[in-house]
Image (tube, rainbow, N blue to C red; front, side, top):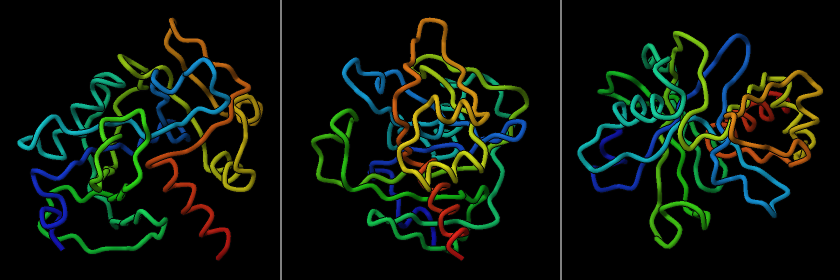
Length: 209
């Protein structure tokens, strides 16, 4: 299978990064998620949609990474295996060919939140997740309110309980680094999306096996 056969230049698509720093997965909490009346906050992999049809997915991943966490991405690393996360939640292992940098994840999204650019479009959106290597500690920048550091045990806890608060995970050794101008209520429940949801599903599948 060629990635270009699935995601054409005109296909709505974006990228996300699988980040690992000193024993922790690194996720982002965008500023748009911090709504005053919300009791939940979604967290994602660092990334975003491509600028236009001419931007490659690799360039999109690198650009979004620099915009959101600074100039700390040394390179993208080809994945040993690519997974396709279908909109219905099914995970399938696929064989991609002719890719200089093989992504770790292709996520299909068909139900769009009211907060994103796809809110009123009846089109599938594909998020392509790449493994990225860091040369230094990332810092939240621009529209990223905070970075959330979780290890596998934290992801397993989310899978088991489904509704841990930020405070619950902080007590278990998670870390939250917010921008100085951002205030995040630790009583808010964390909800995974994108690469975070994929990793939690993988942990759940491994536990069941």
